Length: 492
Image 1 (cartoon, rainbow, N blue to C red):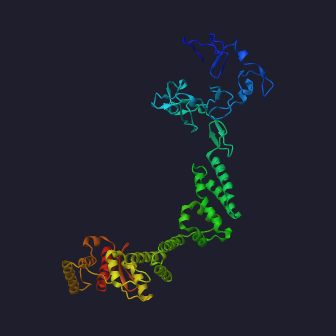
Image 2 (image 1 turned 45 degrees about the vertical axis):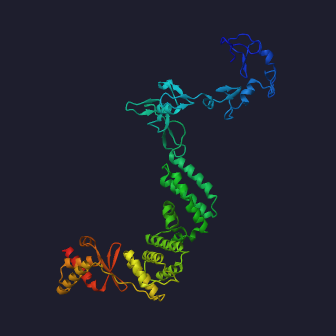
Image 3 (image 1 turned 135 degrees about the horizontal axis):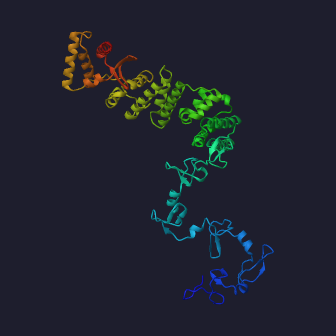
């Protein structure tokens, strides 16, 4: 707009005062008299209509209708049939208009925003930013569950949209399954939306599988999963999470007939089967493959043993552990016990530097047991292997009693009392005190545990959960008599 010193509008061509410009071009005003002379009438270059370009303009002559039809938004380059703003003769679409506004402060949160407006329809006369304004004007409809503009509020304070006015509720049938849905329109229910999304993903991802049976199984799994949890919001994410399971099946098996309990555990492993539990359940149901608990436990223990051997591959004691593991596998020992034996041997070799070239000795075993008393029972098998299979001169050292003189005297007096009374006649308190003192326990803590006796090779083991104590030959009769009489005393 062209204004003079007195703030009066004038024509930029002739200089006369005007109340309203007949045409504005590149920020200049033109009166009705100057308009025909400056904007001469010529043929439109796009159609046969007349156009009025500026006489000094180098752009092609385009009529008003063609200009509206072909103009693009200055910011987003979208078609602008109706401009929200004109900046330097360039149109701006209504969606981009706020980006060319000057920022203002929101009266609610005080933050600067380009979209500060009022909402008189909702009683909001003060200008607010879009975030603050939307919190007051839009809520989740209590009838259809959609986040929409609030049309009203019920007596109990529940908001509703224009499609869910009380007494005028709109409903429609789901186009997919026919279930009644709140609100108008043709929206589908969650189950149908999940089915369409899951099947689209299944058809697309199945193209990456090499075998026909794997593709068919994968699509069947999609249908099975939808029947199981099709109305859940996370149905699609669950399906996508199980895609690596079928990729592994497709890579390892040429046909579904090759899948069995042993091959499945060998190729996938227990960890992956547990991670993809739904896919493994479907596979068991569809192919009739059963995964027993014992088989999964054995597979897990076998994997742990293999991981331990791989972990020590570059260590000097790796060949020794490998031969020891093979020797244990030939014995009638459970896989879990084999793993515990192997772990004790690994720890012993690591701490004492034992390898095939550096034989262990009884002194090394004694030094190790001083710091790892609980590993005695698990290490016994390794010492036996080194002595019998490798011919090393090593023995399991006997259990040493506390070096304290007072403790030794007390233990000696208790043993003499038992010898004088006889093991069968000695009271339970004397027997328990003797065992507690011999193994370095406080008497009360020793009685608080549930002890049991077992035999391993030529040793007698006193067990309490994970704690194992090797009973010296001189204390075997005392331990046996105390355990048996204590059990009878408890039952009485």
